[in-house]
Length: 394
Ligand code: PLP
Image (cartoon, rainbow, N blue to C red; front, side, top):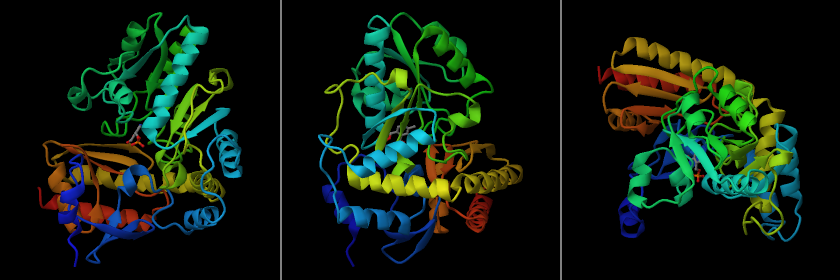
């Protein structure tokens, strides 16, 4: 039997600390490795696989589109791109869409859009304020935007035009705003930073400030969007509308895609100023349309609310049981469990041995983000495995 992991060492760049398991197939919330072992997947491709693995809905949309038209570029119109754009606009507070291929690319485009807005309306203002603990992607500019030193230090000097201030501190944003500021960029809930929720009133205060100053509010909903938190977009839960929003991850249920959405007034690109060869290709957009339509037609967000609550309640019970759990937090199907020491890797490996995939989001915290179609029974099974695993650390 081929040892794929050994073979990979010969060829892969050393960018990721991979879990020693080779996954070969999936179905719903489950995946199988090359030895035939089955795992309950509470990572879901890092909050991506919205409809679960091997979704027949997505498989059929991709099969049909692949046999029809895969790629023609944005020199032309294509039907799936228009259909997906229309669906996104009809179900959000934004009016215009640009499609690309990943989260980082969507955020790059959003910052370009904000700079164009600054040139047009704010006397060439170009600076973007972001916050500590945020994560906006791995391109150089997004590394500069992300408020995490570990991602920045290896790549100095970073592109200029980004100011990082303390998360959850409206006064810090106010103090950092100058006549050079064109936008504030935030995740409504920080995902990679450890599932950090905004303080009561924070997002509303930022919204009000941006409005007052005439600068753009960009919400990075790459992780929180497309139903993950129990509403289609997280901004709905906080009663705050962004001027610009970025999406990726769950948008096409696992097929690579990204999107920038903007209010009419913020949609300031003119032809030639931004683009992408693959962005909005018919294959990815057909997958996106099928995913989003399924989520809307089957009220998947109600399932997220229901099972998400069950997950959080179950995790809170575990917190009462195990003193070494210091915090349980989350919304919908995005949750984190924080420990009093750096034991997340050990917990992850013990979960793996017991047939559950979880993510180490920080040395001392794990993150759970199953597919949006996960059932109550599967939530209970994950909680049962986690309880069994944690008992060994008590
Ligand atoms: N923004 C947020 C909030 C994310 O969670 C991520 C990925 O984890 C990104 C941006 C980057 O997305 P991608 O990895 O598709 O470039």
